[in-house]
Length: 280
Image (cartoon, rainbow, N blue to C red; front, side, top):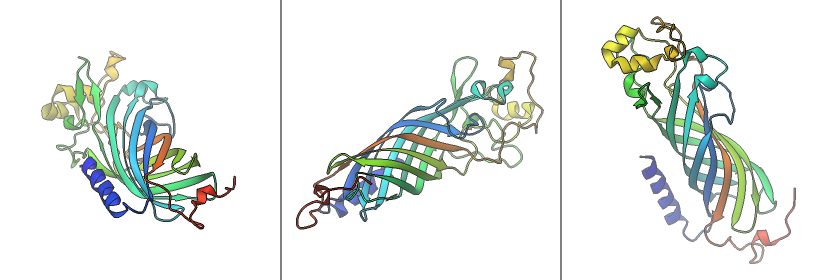
């Protein structure tokens, strides 16, 4: 679905602006990470993964752009690298893809300055699918295992793997020439779920979980016994995660944008980029 949305948006921009020369192809390369119950640091490069993206930006004005992009990355977390909850011994990994569209605002005009800070915000549709490796070395998809009783206990519903987020970000970019700009940016995505890592609230009773989802689900809902053979499954209702704080994911990296076509002639037939530019 996200790929189709991105394709239709790009097709609309190209058809509507084929003669306007205000369209930029944007590329992204960097890292992805998340903040949640298995990664309590607000911002960290620990447990980061490679992320790539591609998109388009259309100049509404010299400083305001309509943007659309799709990014692909990966997120993961483990209690063994956390300062808290190490005895819980949970871990997860998930692919991450996000299609976002919105608006970007340059603090300075890049037709008159060689660099500018910028900010952006919008709406994103993203997909994730948390998984863990069980004691037999087999990858298990966690959402279907209902590790906190989703779908059968106390009105808890199964979380959806495709959801909406609000991307917010900032960066700085530089002009190389009339067609190429480079930048460094960070994008935070505010989520409306606490299950990006499959951990949110309390343990469900072990016997009830086994009866509804089997022994694999119970074995992945609590893994303390793997590092402490004397440990036992916590009583139902015991705290497993913190539902008060929703999860986040974020991208950090380099951007390169390429103008599609020649810049519009201005100031008597010359591009403003041909005029002397201010450094500040």
